[in-house]
View 1 (cartoon, rainbow, N blue to C red):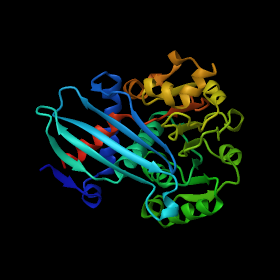
View 2 (cartoon, rainbow, N blue to C red):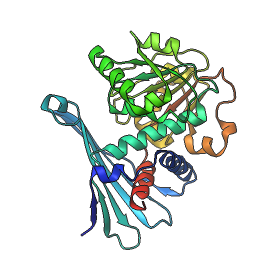
View 3 (tube, one colour):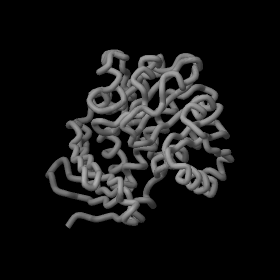
Length: 319
């Protein structure tokens, strides 16, 4: 029987700085064509509403391959159960045998997604971040902020969400977080996305929106935006014209992002050309491709790539 690790055991084996570095290294491997990653599998449900993402792949010449299944069901809160669940399966690349089952309850997916946000900010945020803006109130919003602690030298944060009560709860939870307390970060609510964008030059969007929340006219010169939420067909957080306004648009995976990310909408309406999109791994390898001025607007479209699941699963399996 393969070994099974439950969530508590998995959490004890994650070192955050090493995880962020592993995800960064993974993006480079991906852009160097050293990774085999087939298209994402999707299952979409309407009654009740939910979606399941299936991501899988391997690093060429490595000893394992990985398959990840992660779900999100939007009415779970009414049932008193967690929004998400998931499992990662680690197989031998030599024999095909199942070696390890990581019943992470989607926590590793959340952590590797937050780590990708940290990597994007490391390579694309302006040199001086005056205020961090977080759009969204779920677990990913919290993780995104906490993982920026050692990446961004900033002491101000503004949060916006559709539900004022959830915003207040999130801010209260964050203020009680040892990570935020150690950081000394001051957090307040914004009355609107427009207000948040006027105050912040690093913005992270973490919602399941299907209509744009951040408009081109909202965003000030010198802002970096990391958009996490458009990880499935039909989702959109940024106005397409915003990508057209940006000086640099970066995708975690160009092929994925033009299929179902923010880039999809911008390419479809002619705001940008697919050929103009940079891939994050290439920007990491060659910083000259990225931000060259604090006056530039940059956008990172992160749809989530299987190499992230591969890297974090390997980290746990080898701990």
